[in-house]
Length: 336
Ligand code: ADP
Ligand code: MG
Image (cartoon, rainbow, N blue to C red; front, side, top):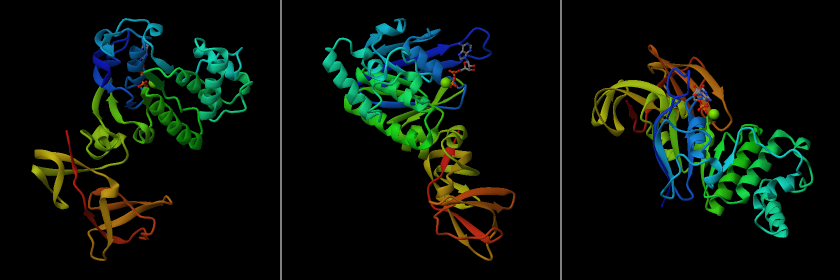
């Protein structure tokens, strides 16, 4: 069931050379988690601010459960927000901050709910602290707890985990996903972190220069990127040339299956883990670089003019300088 429908959104700021956001459209189901993913400056925050009502679009419409909200003020939309700079009330303690949105409940009910939310974000025991007595990461979790406490149908989050350390970030993002799922709230998460988007979103909208260039599930986007931009933004890719004929493509690695049909000269994306590295004294390629990463190893392999990035298991043990042969053992992706 559709919760949010965004169509043809456009925002051109005064003095901006190009529109910050152009022709952005997507829909979001009830309870769905969407990540808006893209590099800094691609229009993610502007898109989110228009959905939240903090920015009026030049064109386009936003509707929530079938109601046109394009021009409603933020407080009339019933949408929750978690900002990059979490705005906590400095004179209220943690518990009161979280209870703020629960004023319609009785005091006892509100406090119980606030304590439950604080436990979920790992802040039990800090109820009586003031915001200035917390670390940045703890403040961010209070802000999350405050927003999620009222279980809004949609929660907008702009880089909400960026102030947390790596381990806390992984834990918190899974908690947030669980919290949203269990309360039935949908979420839109703005992030420039591809790992974060892949880890918690049901679908990802990849943005480039103000537009959504691809939208799909994490595996669709990762395994079948539409362009070199998307392929390289979501992890590393090798780019090859080839001549496509329907579902097959001729390359210097032989004829390979394609992930989707194409014809004529194409660029192809090949993930480093889709390439097999075989030691071969007669091989046409040689290892020029190597990085041990624990769970796997990266190899840079030179073959003629071309340098390919290959990922293999931690057990492979091929020295720099060794002659090797590369084999592509999977379908490759034609790019536009
Ligand atoms: P992101 O969140 O993806 O980093 P933003 O939506 O913040 O990107 O910005 C998109 C573009 O719009 C950038 O070029 C930025 O400089 C510009 N921009 C954002 N907000 C304003 C504003 N209030 N006035 C003028 N330009 C803005
Ligand atoms: Mg931003």
